[in-house]
Every structure is written in structure tokens, then in C-alpha cells.
Image 1: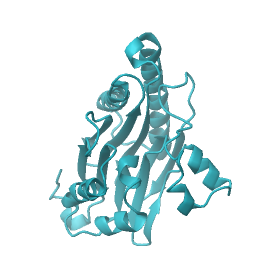
Image 2 (image 1 turned 180 degrees about the horizontal axis):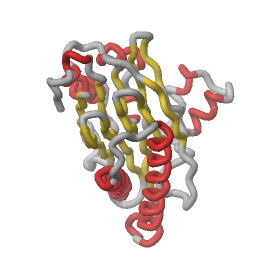
Image 3 (image 1 turned 30 degrees about the horizontal axis):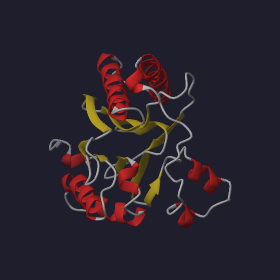
Image 4 (image 1 turned 45 degrees about the vertical axis):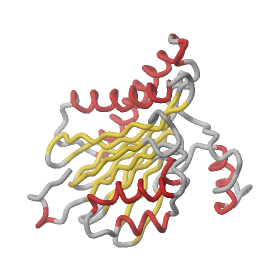
Length: 253
């Protein structure tokens, strides 16, 4: 697998409240994560960084080189619950962090499958030979209105309350995430990103970017495009590419 990760403060905000990271366990598995923090006095930055650091630490200490789909899902769920407790306790005990929270989408990628855990409106997409599709459903007010047929996807893009999140790490002591697994094949690509990207760029444009000959250019290309269109929010992008067999000795970052 090749992976590329980039996060950017954007053109308006002074602090980057996003966080993103990728860490390999071995040649056949890695963990990718993006988080978009919110709330408090500079606390969005604290929430997202605590979340990414917690996942990375748990991943480093988890000794399971031949993990199964069910084990991957269970690890993601348990790690998110543990992370939520860390962020929630920080938010309740530290006055400067009161009210903070963060979205998160994290994926364990192996040569056979991808397992994803998700809270909030940061998203996961996949490009395959069959096309391009969004894997996660936004835990947001507008997302719920679309799912229940009260709002069209086109109108949702311009809704004045599109940034209202219904679920976030650190805002409640008990949190139930979405966790699921899908198989993927050689030459498929996974995209994780925050809403600083998806609020500015259409799904078709995301797909086109993943069709670039050099995927190492994709994060910078997408971030530059979002910034060219205003860059009002922080922007984070992770791309993980399933290498074709003959390319596996040419692993990039």
C-alpha cells in the first residue's frame, strides 16, 4: 500500500483544528485517520490531536499481525470508546476545553479489506473499477434531513445549518459509532477527508483527482482547489492506494 497525508490551515483560520496521520503495522496493514476538532478556546485543536494520538498509540501497542475483519472492527470500536472517554474527561475537567469535540474517520487497511469507524461529518470514499462512492454517512443535521427525505442533496449543500453535528467524540460520555468492513482490490484507492474539503469540492472532482497518474499529487491538488475557492475551513486529506502486485516493491509515502 502507498499512502499520502496532508493537512492545511486554509486561507481564513489562524489555527488548524484538523489532525491527520497514517501508521503502518507491517507490510500488509496500516491505520489511517483524520479528525476535525471544534469548540472551546483553541480546544478543537486539542480534541482532534488527542483523538489522533490516542488511535496512534493504541495501534503501535496492538500486537496482532494477522488480524481478521471482526478483530479489526472490534479494535476500532474499543479504541474509539476509549478515546471518547479521554477527550470527554479533558473537556469536563479543563475549563479552557469545555464544550470541545471532534469528528473522526479512521480505517484499518489490509491487502484484503478495509475496516472503518466513523463519528461526525468527516468522510471516507473509495475508488474502484466500478466507480467512486462515499462510504460514510454524515452524523449531521443536514445529513439526517437528507436521509429522511426532508431535504435534497443539492439543497443540503447550501443549507444554513449544514455544520451542525449530531455526534462527536468528547461531547457525550457514551458514544455509539458506525463500524463496517468492505473488501477492496489492487488499484483501488481510499480517501479520508474533513468537511473543509467536501464543502468546496464535488464528488466528481474528488473522483477525477484520484484518477491522476501520480496519486502523491492528490492531497496537495485537492487542498489547493479548496483554498482557491475560499479556504474558509481547515482541510485534511489522506489517500491510501492498494498497490498492484508488480508495484509492491515501490512503496511511497
